[in-house]
Structures are given as structure tokens and as C-alpha cells.
Image 1 (tube, rainbow, N blue to C red):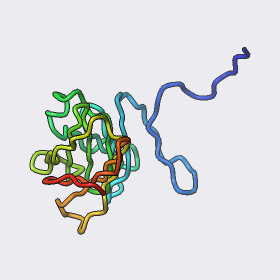
Image 2 (image 1 turned 180 degrees about the horizontal axis):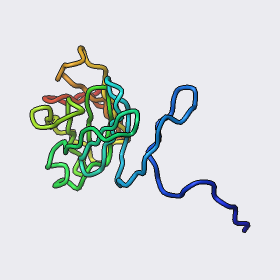
Image 3 (image 1 turned 120 degrees about the vertical axis):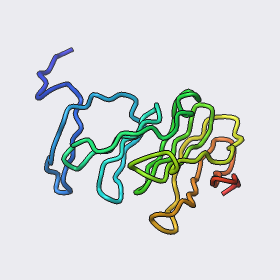
Image 4 (image 1 turned 90 degrees about the horizontal axis):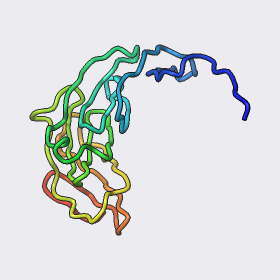
Length: 161
């Protein structure tokens, strides 16, 4: 084995880059349990964590909002999957409950628990379908399963997709 010198720091960083491949900004990353990240309609970075916590950052890596989607997520063993869309987040818990939050700045009345998935094992993936309008709460999530057809899940029903 040959050891090679490392350039730069081994400490994790949050970095934002331009579409031309130029570093815009970086900042130390001290958070753990990241499930997914994506961009909001307002061009803020949305970071979703296993605990159900959501953190948002500006393109300059400055913290904006921190909130917990729903305290029940922790009680259900934390989140195992998450999906981000420009105006919200969806999280699947270890007990296979699906929570949807239709805001990227707060929870409370923006959060709801979807209909029971009734699946025997953890789904493979989540994808939130485009909303009829940007401020719509009529969220539908496609849930990929290993057992059969994908599911179309909403607040009130689950059906084969």
C-alpha cells in the first residue's frame, strides 16, 4: 500500500457550485444523518435528515430555516427514505408511515400523514408527482415496492399505479 498525501481538508463541507463548475461557497458540515437534498422553488438548498429535521441553506451556504416535519417520525424510529420537491418534502419512517410537508420553511399545518401503505417491507424509493399548482396541498407520491406494482399514495388513499 502506498500512502498518498491528501490535498485540502478531510473535514466534510457543504459546497455550492455554479453550472459552469466554479465553487460559489463552502462551509463546514457538522450535521449527521442526511437522507437527501435538493433545491426549492426559491433556490434554497433543502436538506432532509433521518430524525425528520429539515435544514435549508442559501446558495452562499448560509443557514435559513430549521424545523422538524413531525415529532412522530422520531417515535417511529426515524426516516429511512425522503423525497424533495420545489415546495416540500416527503419522508418514510422505519414503521413505513409516509409523512408529507407542503412547505420548506415550516411544519405544523403544512404536515400530514398519508394513508397507510400496507406493505410488508420497506419501499425502494419515493417520488413526488408535480403538483397542480405551486401552493397546492394535493400531494401524490409514487412509492416503488419490491413486492409488486408501484403505489400512488395521497393523504386519503393508496392505490396501484
